[in-house]
Image 1 (cartoon, rainbow, N blue to C red):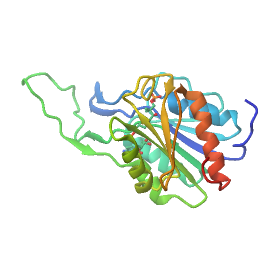
Image 2 (image 1 turned 45 degrees about the vertical axis):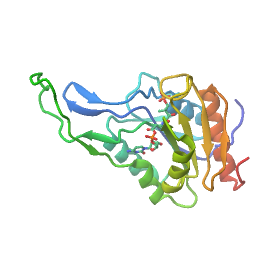
Image 3 (image 1 turned 135 degrees about the vertical axis):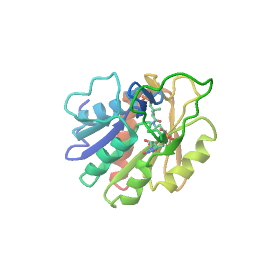
Image 4 (image 1 turned 45 degrees about the horizontal axis):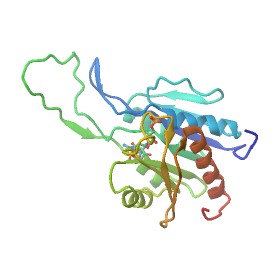
Length: 224
Ligand code: PMT
């Protein structure tokens, strides 16, 4: 890959599924492998950007040339992203962040006893919404949405509500899309309602399509 169209830009990408501890040996999480976020980091390095990758635990090796910031919980990811947001030109949020965490993390391993166990959960901060509020005009903010129903309606609502420049929406019920796979099928959703559906493609090719869109947004052109 020879393009250098992200040279001089500082970008931050989040990846993976956060883990919310229940006790010293257990956690609540999701099926994110980190592949989408790591592909975005690899593609950005290939195109000349300085890349910070804020990653929840994955089994992947970070691409050469990225600054890796390892986090575990949604609240750790929130702090890591907020501390670095001011110096970013572009932020892409491919991580699957837990919306809720257990109210308490037990100090000792929870013992089995009763037939049923009720867990009380509390809301985590919404990192993407907070970035949307803090965003400076020069900054580009790209979110992801993993939906299992009403993809377009939900995506259009999210792109406006969270003040995003682009939302990459995956219908995670389709084979070859979303969590864990090496491929994805998405719709690129822009504020104002323009929607561009993309065919099935590997996550590195999709990553490059997303950076193409970012380059176009930065040049002030309307989406193709
Ligand atoms: O990691 P892979 O296995 O490659 O899978 C890729 C993926 C399916 C995880 C990725 O393509 C994807 O869709 N990531 C977002 C998944 C998700 O959590 O979607 P959501 O609709 O719940 O969240 C919407 C957006 O808000 C996301 O950008 C998310 O990072 C962000 N968010 C959500 C909750 C929260 N508390 N803070 C956030 O910033």
